Length: 220
Image (cartoon, rainbow, N blue to C red; front, side):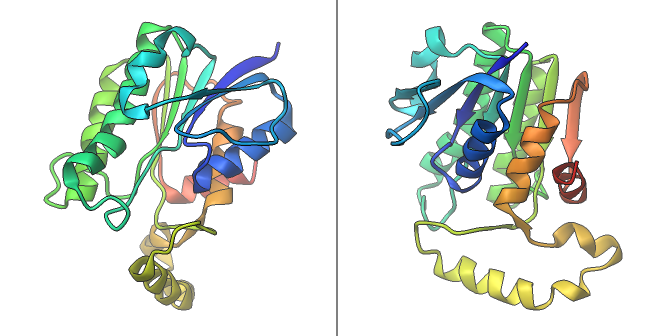
């Protein structure tokens, strides 16, 4: 029996790869996108709901599916205001998880980050950690938290400092062995593939997925 998928962040780096893969895969007979702007050229079975994701609760009546993929995320360079940053990286995934709970959606998948820790002194890691903590308390049937390392891939916006960091990290990738493997750069396409492959599993409870496991899941 085919199912319905919701994608949050389908116009972003990882989300766009995921949307493409889900369409090609054919496992879902309906795909719902919730975003700020419309994506052109999609099949008729892709339904698009346009609005303010910071008010995700406004979409409650249409927020029904078998699985939700939350690929929402921003950066300090793109969103320097910390309040807005937290509203996006914490607020949207938490709102989505709560809607999953209230609308009886069994599976929720969210992209977090390596180093997520609600007790961290680093704002980025703390925000991701706090998001994870609230998502987990929703006690959904299936919760998958993906914790990738630095994500690579073509982006529309310019991120000068991040690009420099990626350049340096790519140059020293061969040195990342043993316990350092988890810090290897991961391409957004690999994360998207891992998300799709994992949606075909049926693990009950909360599953934390670190970088190396993401790579393994992408190969299945």
